[in-house]
Length: 323
Image (tube, rainbow, N blue to C red):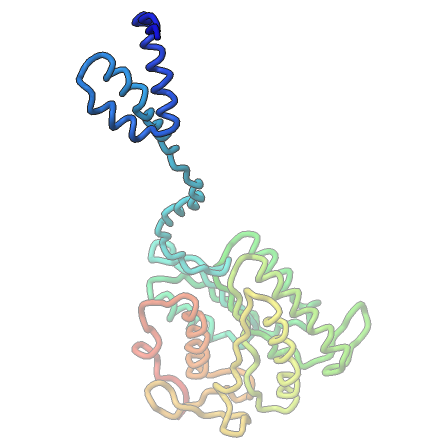
């Protein structure tokens, strides 16, 4: 038999590639091992390149981790500035007093303050922190406005002067009938009390409208029943009117000159401990010792609002009154 002619090297190489491809499919692992034992040369390297598995693709890099956005924190509170403690509030009528700007006081009334007003002037001015005008108009009051009108007096005087304190005490002469528009109103009737209260309101309003602190002293215990009945009816009217007005304070004087049962008492002990007469023989007005006791009482009420430095009552008090 005749041998087939020798193929060209190219054909041989293609045949080998085909054989290698088939072998790779059928037995890739064994063929690769066999080729690996071949002599080193271009053929071996070519077959190994064909038979070697393609390198696995490099894994894709992991995506950068993503995080949910954090919630926004509330803004920090602004630092609270330290606030100085507020100054204590005072009523409109109050002010700071000093020796250069003393307390201005007007003590005014009927014959009940005839000696009490000068005594208050002595005591308050002795502190060096007050100046006092003392004014007493005997035989006046709220009933006989045809004889003397206290509202008109306040209008005239307060238009020219100003005060921090106005002390009022009157009523000793008011135990009598009242005339209103030429009609008589009998004493201690409902109509009389209503009109008397109206007149108290008018006078209080005028005093308070001046910007002053007003202290209205009630009537003391009286010896005569006529006067005592009037005081018993009038004092609650004045007290109620004062309580309805912030600048006005009612000051009761009944206990100063009453006995244990609340009745009229003529005698009393002064600050020296001596038994002296406190009331005048008429059973209405005061002796000097009684005036001093009343002045001490009224001054104490003022000093609740304006503390004064000196105690001018006891040390220099005249030892007056009949033992």
